[in-house]
Image (cartoon, rainbow, N blue to C red; front, side, top):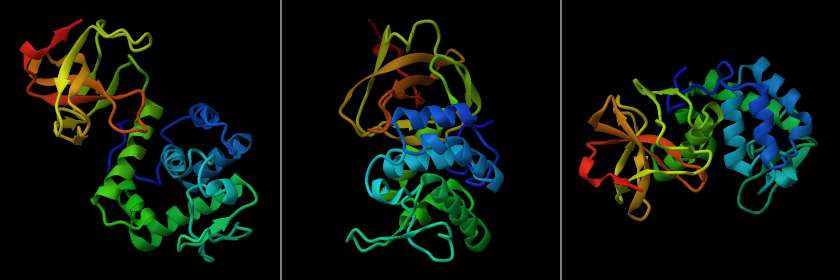
Amino acid sequence: MTLPNYNTLALAAPRIPFSTFLARLKTKNSPAVSQAQEIYDGFISSGVDPSFALAQYRVESQYGTAGYAVVTKSWGNMLWDKSLCLNAVGQYAPGNGFTYAKYNDVYSASLDYAHYLHDYADNRDLHTIWQVTAEWIGKAPGTPGHVSYIDIIINDMISYETQPGKFYEVGDQMIYGGPEFDRDTGRVVTKYPIVYGQQLYRGTDGTTLKKYLGKPGYAWFLGFVQNSPAWGMVCIGTSMADPDATWCYIKNVDKTKIINV
């Protein structure tokens, strides 16, 4: 299965098992933990990919533990819509110009979250997570606010499916970090300079990840692809929501700048 990207569908077969779904909710002591099985099963039966739903739940409310969701018990800070919020028990207007649907429990909210996604697909022809997220936050596709929002979601979805030090598919190549790097212990033996504005890639097919906008510094260098300096792999934090860093590609590696430590 190809790793999540902008063209991944919101309504799709499940990308992650229930065990992963539950484990991530537990990391924040989410109010959804007690109903996790019902929620997961409900997403499956309604055709919603639990991976996307889970990632959006985190970016919107840290799995229900922050923001308006603490009051509303909403899955994705859903705006009140009487035709879609069929399981809501009330409305919540915090004074920001919007009115949100309010629920008795997270499971009820998750049912209406599925209603929203089906309305997007069936009535608005919005199917990919690129399209859905732009509509959800009310921003034009590709604007900075939209790109930052969806990139956090995609990074989360990728983290749900991958494990440090394991093989996984991205772009058109198989990634392997090699024996020099032990992510479990944090032992790094090679590093490479990264500069502001440097383009990062998801794979050697040229699919972009984002540009590095942090301070110049060093990334963990994992090795070359097919022993060629045309593509190298680095492990680098791509956002504040990505504290453990993401494996990604850089182009045209200068071998003389690789530092062994």
